Length: 510
Ligand code: MLC
Ligand code: AMP
Image (cartoon, rainbow, N blue to C red; front, side, top):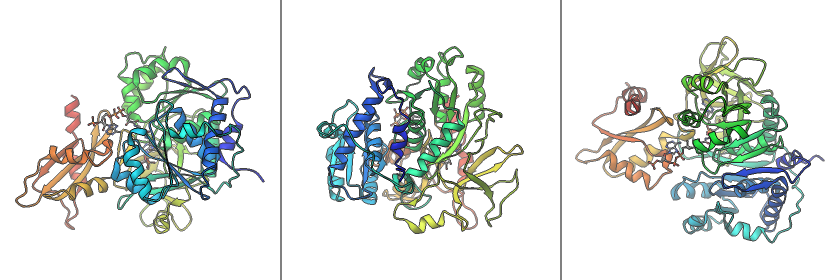
């Protein structure tokens, strides 16, 4: 019977010359395909030696490194479920994820071992390893004693490969369950759709705990047997320096904005580039146009989600890449726009975007009711994005029905931040709204009402949040006001707050 293990498919695409460079790092290290093959085998053998239950989760919160990527691949190879966690998450956030996912293995940085292991052991996790970005840590020490031969464990297409936590409009984060089949089908479609070819070299400058950097970029390069130029952190100067050696780049819009600020970004620097892909947040038309002018390249914008991997893309060839649109549904994906009463809308009309296809996740981890709510009776997933299909068939995202702020490509859920603010002494109520920002696209601004007699200060609220939440979730400003605008039902009118504060950072930038 065919093995549907995603790793087996990625491994099958390695070039025959295993000694060629697969990954070149910004610290001057070269990893060959053989290194990836052997390193992932040793880590997979380590995982296999732990006697983990079937479907065990391997939770990972480590700095970006090639070894961290290998750990992801090894988890697939060993047939377990990978759970990546943003390095910015702090203890309360980690406690929730570990408590909810009940991983059998936790891998963290050695600097965080004290508090992370405490949380993990308390939640029943039996194995806690460390992995640092300088090729040290107990995970590597233990894997070093393992065989470098390992047969990828047999998996069905429907078996879980990863859980990605993504927050909802209410309540806590939900774990989106992605299968080997979800990810392989998407990787194969993109390989073809984006014209990946022999000799392609990808600059990998994104974090590897979300869909964009972990799946779209890594799977894209590996399934094409392509070398990656690996940046531990995005660095606009270094990207510009490396462009002449590369053919493909992927980034969230903030990366494009920052690259445009580099005088070295020229047509000459991009002479060997074939493709610039943008996604995870709306790309401003100004950025799209400026990029074209400066580099001669038209950015290809695509759209996806943690629950679905990639859904739509502008064409690579054969038709225009239209700025301000996310292109067409990818082959195999059915996409429709519906109104609130469940009627499909004709081109040009705005409604909720719904999707169906082999890439759509299996459901939310241990939340069958929530999963059911997010699918229609005929099996379409409700994305929570609002859009339309334009007169030429291109999909345009015009907003979101979910209360979500996307800041520099990271998602911030107002309900979560408001919850923390509302719990502070002296706070009667709060509202977090997204406002335009020249670097991050959108950032959160908190508007707070104090309890009668309480004296509150915005800076102090921000300071307290910093000790509790991941840094990208911290409101960039916090205002204490006497009242919030409300509709006749008493609901806070966030649209009015967004309007009121929309120029906050435009002014700062001017
Ligand atoms: C950093 N900061 C942010 C931020 N990133 N604030 C708001 N939004 C962000 N995204 C703040 C920090 O809190 C800190 O503030 C200051 O900026 C410097 O932090 P840093 O870590 O040094 O920032 P930097 O390295 O410059 O990071 C910026 C960035 C990063 C744009 C490189 O945010 C990034 O890599 N974003 C990509 C996210 C991504 O991969 N998304 C894909 C999701 S997948 P202070 O006050 O503490 O100094 C998905 C599906 C799909 O959505 O379709 O792809
Ligand atoms: P995540 O939960 O991180 O997977 O974020 C997915 C969300 O990012 C989607 O539901 C969209 O709202 C948004 N998104 C992704 N790509 C794009 C894009 N190209 N344009 C606008 N929004 C996007």
